[in-house]
Length: 368
Image (cartoon, rainbow, N blue to C red; front, side):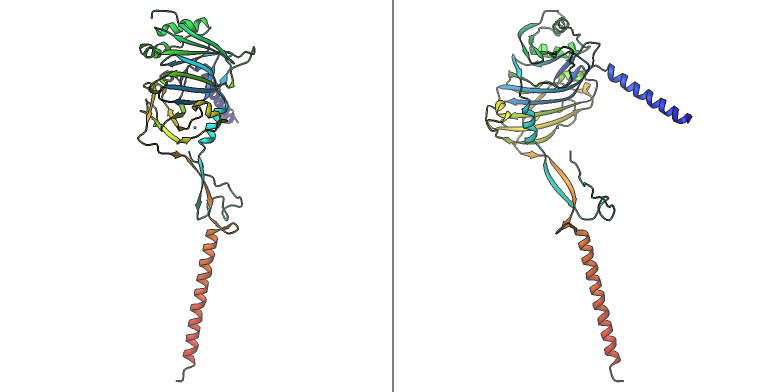
């Protein structure tokens, strides 16, 4: 009894410690920007989906976050290379792309019975084997501000990363440690910021669940996806990108993460009523779906630049379902084969015995 009580107390202590770590861990960064809350709140990004459209001159990024926590408001910052416009995106876009990139399903048969197959089990078993989805103190220049749903969107310029601190302070937020330093390369390249204040219009409502997507558009002669700010993340990050361009695209390098994995590549031709049509102006495009893990966010070396692959080779991930090979009305092929072998062996044995009996009888009937 004493040992059982001691184990329970130890387990409870571990769970309380884990919960405390979760409560104090700041959600400073997510895949394509920085998420900032006040000191008394916490917010985590459970899932981030991004769609990038690039036609060689203009880049569009549609992002949607699924968040949890107890923060009634937060701020999210994203660097952009040129002046950006921001509007609400179509939430049905992600479902449209998910359907287009579904893995191909194939059945893979096996001959000999496995666990769960008769005679090893009376149950049928499902037999499924699943395969493997962003110091001068000069004031921030506000070049535009819009209220979009639960988002207060400000488009900013700044000659110094510390200027962003002033805007955050004016809106009730504190610049997280290290964020100013990570913004400095963008300032040196004269990038601008999209700063979004997430504040539900309903009093007392927390920022939880799936938020409305935002669609950001800016001029760019290269396809770039900002990732540098994810260096501030305290937990492993995962990136999922749908890339729409004239050709199949791939990251130029891994920028400190795992090897990028292409899960789909192929040309798509949206119908006028499809959500995808609004993003491609109704024209066909080449869709590439890329997934990448960042087990050590601090190792991220910069932003993703995506470039054209040598060939527009199509690819679709395959999900296999293993099934016992059967013949006719569900008769296992192995059982039929074994039965056939037994019947053939029995027939051969009977034939051999008959021949021996006939020879014996013939030998006994000869005259001495």
